Amino acid sequence: EVQLQASGGGLVQAGGSLRLSCATFGLTFEDYSIGWFRQAPGKEREYVACISLSESSTHYYAHSIKGRFTISGNNAKNTVLLQMNSLKSEDGAVYYCAAYWGSSCPEDQYEYDYWGQGTLVTVSS
Image 1 (cartoon, rainbow, N blue to C red):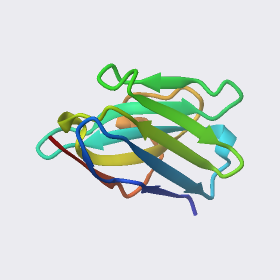
Image 2: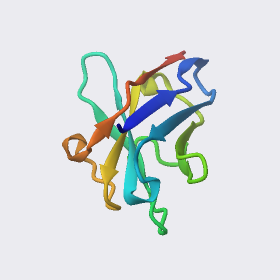
Image 3: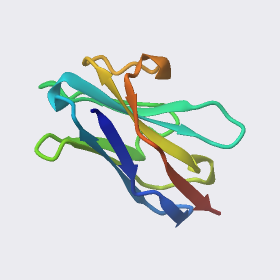
């Protein structure tokens, strides 16, 4: 059974940092891309970042977070991290990780095969 477990959310002041973790179980890590999405109250779920876990290890970022967030993969631990720096109030949302079978890191959430349960990030101004 494939499972994704997102963790690391919390309350942080604007300008601060958080590191989210997505632990994966039951999948062949290198065959997948892992994406992070977020959903704020009353808004659509949006693409944040993605990493292809194949040898290319390519990273993709949404324009709104580029330069502030960094995605990385630990193949030994089957875990993907999202380091979030210089947080803004508009970054507050529930963050989800998702797995896509393949290396192309699609921005469309409906392309993803498996989802974690979400972790809440609250940014106070």
